[in-house]
Image (tube, rainbow, N blue to C red; front, side, top):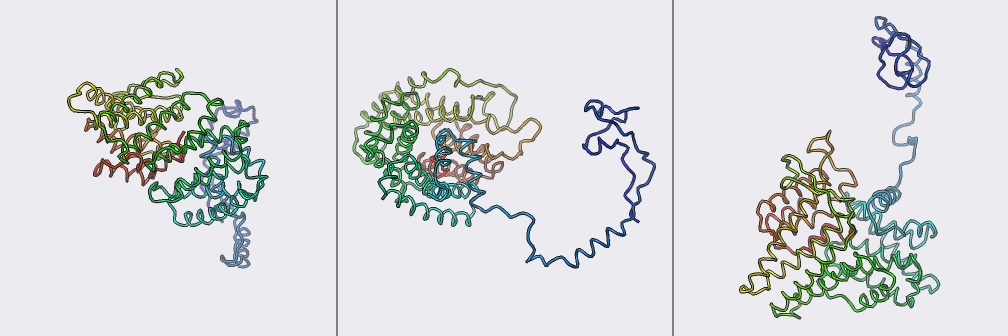
Length: 473
């Protein structure tokens, strides 16, 4: 005999539905609302004592004939890392976060399950999971998948009938994405530029046939932006092939983001020319930077009015800089606005460095712009890291929050790096420390320490370290 304790007074439907029964006379409120027959209530003074003899014998016999643990078969087969990685890549990244890979799912639906596109997806999916978990075993698996994808894509490129297709172009671009996730050193990886340059060559060799379709144009537009970012991170000038590609696409694409990318091309070239001493005249450098900053400031006014943030004022909070923060339409909008601010911070930093001391007005304007832009970046961060009202400040980040925070780290770094406000720098460091804890993001702690100890580190290096190339809007 086994004592099961006093029974619950709740009626049977409430016990089955795991609801709190109000024990109302006649019929409980839960049953009335659900239009169920209420069975009445049990006497709580009764004891539940059951005879468990037969059940105990059955359990003992089962243990005797049960196979040993090593040879036992699980009730359900565990999913392989490849399957789990692919599911996470599509669920969290393609459908949940990115705005740049909307053509990938339909391409995968049309492609062979064992072809070069599937192999490229497998490689980048495992690399994406490794990027987020920092697991050595996954890095090794990602490398194996990458080698397989390289072989299959190489075979496809040698076949004229499938080389100049959207499927193959997407495959090559995924290999580039793999490199940016797996090798986050733009100066130390030979493959940092090879795949993206190969993708441009593929488009040009097709006689621009690839950009005749909507899917091809979407891929080529993404390609143009990623090549510009790759050149910026590698501190090299934009190749003529990209200039030609942009000219071919200009009649098909025309929005503020495309115009922004054109200014980014000029900024990357200016930075590369300064680094290579191709331009050495400081007043000339400062003048070019001022002109580009004016273009960006004007271009920003053409963004949709719905992209303007809504300011929210709250009482003092450790995740808030100042007395208010900005709420944007979504993370994509916040990311684009921060991209404008980041490039303008770069340009105003160049103005301060190269503008002669006697030119006080441009220097004063640049200092003011840096402080304003830095505060705007801080105001854009809080909304994405505030915990829900019912949770404390220690609440863990969701998967989506973690991805969002990766894209917030570089803007926070350059804001803290360039602002003359020491309190802002300290806040940026504290926020990245918080991201490291709440999001289990080691890279956030690394960047926070860089801002603490070596704030002269180049922004593009931080951008590459964090993996933002892969997460760019």
